[in-house]
Amino acid sequence: MNPDVAVHSFDEPRERIVPSQLKGRTLSGDEVVRPLEGLTLIVAIKSSCDGCRDFVHSSLEELAGVTVVVVSATGDDNAEWRDAAQPVIVAPELLATLDIRWPPFYVLVDPVRRRVVTEGVVFGPAQVAEEIAPHLS
Figure (tube, rainbow, N blue to C red):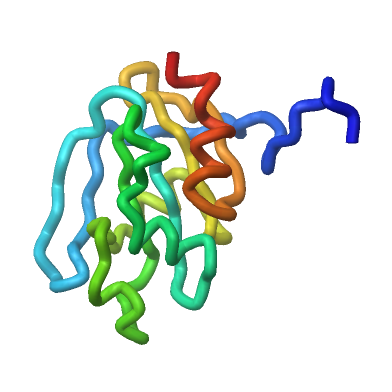
């Protein structure tokens, strides 16, 4: 592989609306409404997904420099997320607004400028941290 070529799981971010707040429900059914402030990494997960498990069950130390929100279109029917280290928010409307159709996928959003900064496929926290690092400074 050529060391001068930057490998990334997605080319350029697609233009679309970035909401100013997150609305959804916790896995227990409690309503969540909170503003999106500053750069926010939204990670769309699904059940039976190896890369997703790392986002749900790890401490996400690699991503300490950014707010991380883990989102799913559906609840946890298989109880995979029962002992989650990260809260999972069920927010199908947010995923539709951000045009995230096929989890596992991430978008780094700037809610102030209302744009997607970068996006890509999720393989794990370290990979996502490496891909978004240039956009965090």
